[in-house]
Image (cartoon, rainbow, N blue to C red):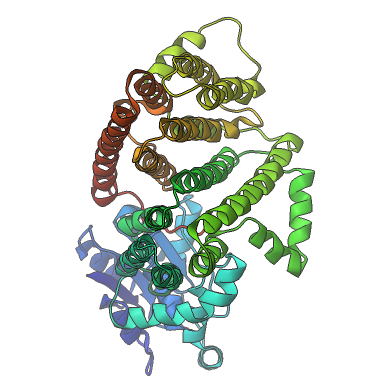
Length: 602
């Protein structure tokens, strides 16, 4: 139970006490600062507490935004301040300081809540102030000002503002114009019936899995049903985030579910399409795995670039300036958002093509569209990196090293190479990563199945990848190192499974890449939540990218194609079990911060 301390003399006709109770607060009244301090000390330290001026006039949603958001230890709006357990100590200090300064006098002529916020600011404590927009939050000083404030409240539809703010501020064209106009009402319907964002997220996952099952039937009716269900799953996917923003139900578990289920839904749908095609006599597993690899690499490019420039200084370039200029022209904004084929456009395309054509055509369109989008976004980011003079921080270098996912082999080699007197220039890390990755994939492509040459190429790849991460990744293009490692590992698995040319090899490779990709996505979302990378024991236990690659090429060289398929399946199951158990343990029980992804549409 949360507690609100209402300070000052009550105002006849005020709805503040009822509003606070409706937001889940137990309301206690304090006539002056001394009594407020006493009441504050009585509230258990593991509960949220708020100090609110009794003269407050404003929208209930303004109070909701200021006093119930779980993401911030301290938050404030005019006339009200709140603290979660993490911010309780700072609030208590500020209250004591104001009480001492005010001598315990009545606070009817001044707002104790606002004075506390000023004291928090003076000591450098971070206090979140939500953007209220047209919502009203004020502490009128006299009856005339109170009347004017009440008129301002009446002039703005609180619920309309709440519904509008539930929609993500930046999204794709399809989502903005074809989904959000009605999905926000689904979110409100769910909120009024007590449903949580996690329940809606789970419903979206179940719907997508049913869609994948329909696609796996291989019938025209199944494909049509799959397309419709995929769109409905996306509607629910939008509604869960809108419900979280509408009701401010952010949580650690919700952040994890929202981040991972989108990937699980899409890649499960790829597998469903491949199974459906196989029922019709068309083997498209290589296309399905290729589409998944391309999409994963696109995401890694996004993540690595953002982390490399998260807190870089002098972070400007002519390319960025041109991009900002284009964003000032209405139609170019939507054109550029559609070009990158975000999740809304991508799922809409898959749904329509699944219902109207064949899985092979669907995958061809997906591969072409995603390849074009990847080329467009990566080229733009390379140009930005080359034309800006940014200094990247140790935090950024550490994040890129974590995203690189180097295992024990690369770690040992990097320690040796890092001590050599002759070191490559700071910007040459990516140039060290490329040759080994290219030679590895070429050896797998050009050599027949069972050849020993890919093993030698994998050993060279381990050496070059270790050299790439031996020193901090602070060069202009070093954010490309993690995507290069992902492409090398995944493409090697794809090629070797394709060369095995036996039933089950490509589905087993699909499972292995999916399991490893989950680990890489989990790493990203831990870093985004400022919770740090996965523990080193986990990375070492699953070999790191170079260790897994070496194991796969050695298995391909030593085993028959059928045995290789069994080995890939066993490896996929082992990796999936280890990473899933650790990931679930972390996100459910670690106390990682409550976050919600408001970034680029994936």
